[in-house]
Amino acid sequence: MRVGPLKLKAQLYCGDEPAMGPGKADLLEAIDRTGSISAAGRALGMSYRRTWLLVDSMNRCFRERLVETTAGGGQGRGARLTDAGRDVIARYRALEAKLADAVGSDLAGLAALLREEPLP
Image 1 (cartoon, rainbow, N blue to C red):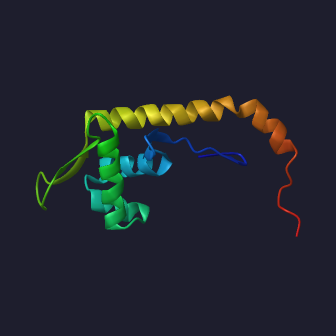
Image 2 (cartoon, one colour):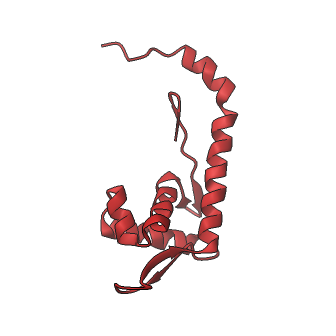
């Protein structure tokens, strides 16, 4: 997430593995919108394999699964966020908002010292 010239990237780790970060949060939201892991990946420009690896990682890192899947095509098939998945997204986005608010005054002073563009 960018706040003016500052890029904030909150990541939550499970051991040495990133359990949640901005990309995984975007993926969960895309799964919620599309009802499909593969469609969510396409919407975000990710490969099918990458999206499945990210979902697997999140499901292994959290105490409860964030995404449930039903194999095959057709009615009632695909993927959906669990209540835990929705809770994690809401808490993660709230954390991002608080981080952005917290840097406000310090960032203004630093940003005033920056050039618009680097010198050639």
